[in-house]
Image (cartoon, each protein chain N blue to C red):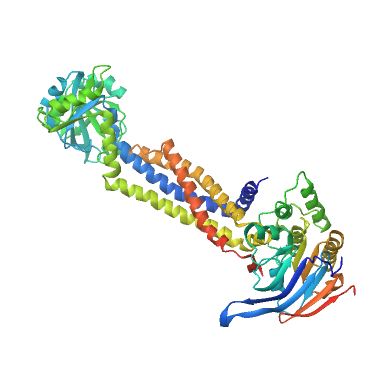
Length: 379
Length: 234
């Protein structure tokens, strides 16, 4: 058996021996990893919730006001831009989208809550959501709407299907799955005509133009042509470009995203401290025994392997419950808030790598004590 | 073996040692010259603070010699570093006053820590561990951890750990302090057998007069100086 394998075996014996200490140690590491996972989950919720509407629109290219950054910001443009875009070769359809923030009245509590009302033409390809495609014809009747099934409870119950928005009664004729975001508790889809009734907004102004290209058309030349013919008050993006632009905005252009990243860093720092305390105490409690090993002829490298193996084992043992707990807590958060809070496989891998680095760094710090160990201190 | 052997296991010449430096330095060993042949069983005695343990730790390469010559089992201990230092320590069997056993390890696993440093093919090392623990009265306690053993049993595990790899030199600091008479005799017999049958040199520090008769030599240190060196076979 090689020296490293012997060191690993020995470290397992050391760590697994005292069950109560092991449980406390795993608890400490799990806590630190949970801090990081939750921050990452919150950040995902921020990014995903901000992008969920954009991801669900049925478009190859979007034309928007040049000031509209991020996508959810409300900046409209003249409807003429829609027709100008439709005139470009390769563009098959151009659908308008209207967005307004209105007040929904909770009829049980008599309280007002903001809701995002999205107007579209029911007979135009606008959303990728199956439920919307199926129920869109129902919206042709003025005064009807589809309610986001993932809206928060703050909107209250609708026993007879009638809601009150901006003091107007609206009949909810169906639902669709979208989700809340950090601005509103839910969304409502209505036809263009219902939208104008609700908002008193002029039909001359639209929020977004959704362009579908003729099958097989490359978006590049179309974008170039759009840039050439459209006035400077609007810009055209492919859907992927706009998603990337919005991701960059939310990742780097907002304080909350930075705060959540700082939260991850703090979790890492807390983890290093906890892990260091565990390993340092382990070394300190067995100082005479480690010194005896050195007196027997074991080298510093062997003892370093023992401590590093302990730290790696700790990171693995702490990682598993933290992933289970973190996923459960984020699911609970998603269920209660409607936010798309969750973890991806990449997040799991990243946190696994962070756990490994956190414990290894703590192990390296704890090793300073071992390096200074003199077996002569045994006397 | 005789003390006049050409290649002594331990050879000290003019060895001095001080703790600290400058005006606060405290000299604990003064110009010690001593030679132990392979297979000799020597007991070193002396009052507390006479420098016995310091001398033992110098021979065990746990401290760096400062002045004088110090050669042990073919190694000049001046400037011994790294792998050479580890290699030298691996040829020793060190018995400390305190057992220093890892609480996580069974008696068998504790002794195995010593044989792990000297990999052998097959199960020979494990057989030797079992035989030695059995000889030390721990045949039924091999799977016990330190907290399940008495003080004397723990000390015997530590003794087995020091002897199982058949060291060239055994350095023992009060090894029998925690043992009853019966087990003291077993340990002394074991050390004597190692010395006389395998040529292992044994240097034992003790104040326990019960064990003096087992030794070939009695060395007495007083105030850091060699006070007497008596060969009991003389």
